[in-house]
Length: 123
Image (cartoon, one colour):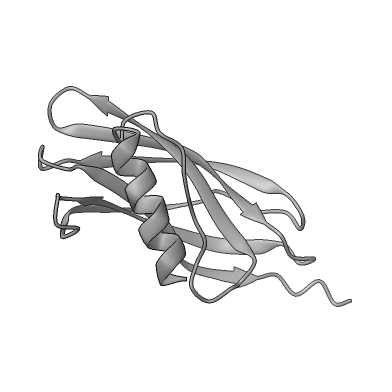
């Protein structure tokens, strides 16, 4: 998993960060993964647009996302949280947006699923 994260961070740096698509899968192997793009708005705001993909057979609810801006050394210098509205359907996706107040010196970004709950469908 560490190798995957390192590869994604290098890819993000090579693509310049802005408008680069990145994927991060939670370390828990939960079946939820995140894809996103970033767009700088003005000098102090970054917008994240993306989707959470659910590879499991159960819908996910109460999905919380953590977005972080990283400097050249990989240190977190900005952070924001958001929720995915509604459910992430089984074998489906849900969209999200995150607004982040940026420090201005971010070189790359990451988004990860911070918490979630699978909906018990009674099956």
